[in-house]
Amino acid sequence: MRQYLQCGRYGFDLDARPLVMGILNVTPDSFSDGGRFHSLEFAVSRAEEMISEGVDLIDIGGESTRPGSPPVALDEELRRVIPAVYALRDLGKPLSVDTYKPEVMREAILAGADMINDINAFRAPGALAAVADSDCGLCVMHMQRSPETMQQHPDYDDVVAEVISFLRERIEAMLDAGIERSRLCVDPGFGFGKTVEHNFALLRNIGKMRQELGLPVLAGLSRKSMIGAVTGKPLEQRMAGSLAGALAAVAHGARIVRVHDVAETVDAFNVWQAAAIH
Image (cartoon, rainbow, N blue to C red; front, side, top):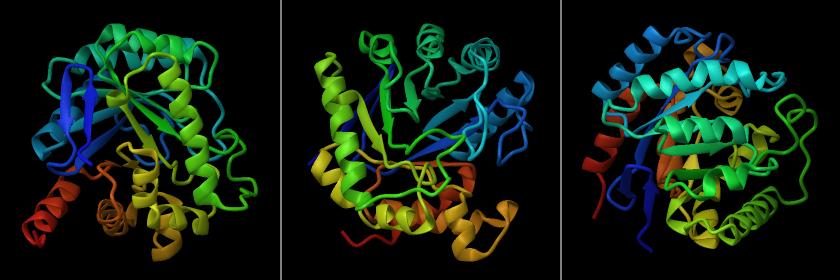
């Protein structure tokens, strides 16, 4: 089953190799980089660095979605994100915008974004209408509850079946809205309303998710608590665990990995592919 992803100005044959999506937070309170790339100058510098490291897509986020984080006002998110899209759109790599607000989606697409990455799976009123008439890629993610409450006792009878069922319903809603299937990919939402056990059950079943939904799977495990739970390492010491997670995700069938450590992930994938048995 060959998989292709239409991503705005770009198209990807996802059977050729896994893609590396680099995280670019333009927030003052990012859980991982501490807002170091909050200023536009530093955001451009980091984007150029990621490109030199071999990144395939750049994911721009203007609102922290770490557990317990409060929502950011619409005007503030627009102020953070849209100038970054304008500044980066001609660097030769597709730009993804990480948002669940339809107004930000519309403005980002007008500014030149090639993908919208929505933790809320395009459920907000007006979200489907905001993206339907574009040609940008769309990442549909599963989340239980909201970032403020998602880690307060996550509960499932069968996490794999329930996540697949949720994503299937959202895909059908998007197809009904006239969105082409070639624009879609799915994200099980590691850490978004899941325990460590839930996260690893989903990781082991990426292949099942890909087969049942018939869409590429994006995996975002980088530096998350599931890595810390296994390694016992604090946030700033989770690179090795994150690389192992990225490789495990690809081994199980993920075609895109969303990471902080671009150069190291690209190197790991290059060695992985060189050693692959064909």
